[in-house]
Amino acid sequence: MCVLNDAVTVRLSLFPNTAKPGKNPARPRVLHAGKLYHPWRGGMEAVIKWHAEGISHRYESTVLACVPRGRGGNDVLNGVTVRRTMSFGMFLGMPVSPAYLFEFRKLTRRADITHLHLPFPPADISHVLFGRVDAPVVATWHSDLVRQRAVMPIYGPFMKRFLKRADRIIVPARSVLDKSEDLAPYRDKCSVVPLGIPIPEKEPLWAPVAAVPNDVPVVLSVGRLAYYKGTEHLISAMRNVDAMLVIVGTGEREVELKEIAQSADYSDRILFTGQVPDEELDAWYRRCSVFVLPSDGNAETTGIVQLEAMACRKPVVNTRLDTDVPEVSPHGVTGLTVEPGSPHGLAEAINRLLADDGLRSWLGENGRIRVQERYSVQQMNASVGDIYDELLGIDTRESAPHERTGELAEAA
Image (tube, rainbow, N blue to C red; front, top):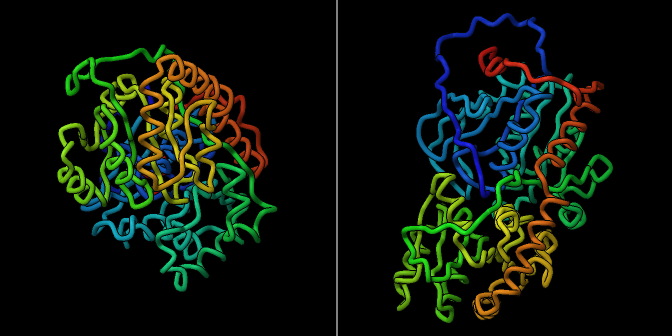
């Protein structure tokens, strides 16, 4: 995004809580159960953060997540209680955290509504084993399980039982719903709610970055360095592009991708920044000339980072996946779309944009307008809040903010 507020972290007391079980909340309580959470970056993590913070005047949010590796902990981030469980490390893109199930059991008892963010097998397994049957449960289906299909013989029965139990399944795009075999039996309880991002109020003006001379064009890619991101194709494409490639993010393929880049005779034009603070990410979005989402796998369902680039008036090069990616940024409207897995196609599209200032400006302006009209976080959160209200049989739309941060986690 272009403008993000710093997270203010307050450590919670680890002493046993003394909250009264029967206390009536000023706002209904929602438990968001997901994989990881801010400052870890990813599409699912961003959506959970925007829900938890953006509906705070209507619902009191607690987030249950893991750490990628190591000991867990409790925080309050921007008014949202976050409980992170320990993890032995990442396996197939998921943290290995047996403690997650037990924390879920404690937290869900105090929630008026539970919202799972999938795919993350420990979340729906936890609900099948420990979830309340007397409180609504919602799931956001970010994508089908792709890389981890090998676990389906064990996990599949839990997933089906959970989907049968869920009161509402939120899907970020019609294409995800239409193409998901896992969701096919449950379409009658699915609602399409497009993803939305916070749109910066200030004009996203060009900004210098010390790491790159001002007269050098920047091609930017942001995201977790995962198997479906296609980053290796973008690195190969840069052989025929006279610009600096900046790759923001970390992930399980980071070492491998750096080795690929270092072996190239143009490695001096490739910069890996790792995970960066929000202010630095904001500066890279402003500084770049072209944003590229080179994903080559259907685990990339929307590509929130391309929305963030569009909000900053940057033209996007994306790929013709069988998901919502090319619909979010349509070819010839807000950017250029190429075939997935094609370094030649990526290089050709990037060079076309770098050579035409007028085209870049026109596509960038269209992108900003498209995000404002279709993909704002306010629209997304209003729809999700209304779903909560419907399931609970209440109306929180006129609720005033209340200061009750942390009570759900403390009550557990």
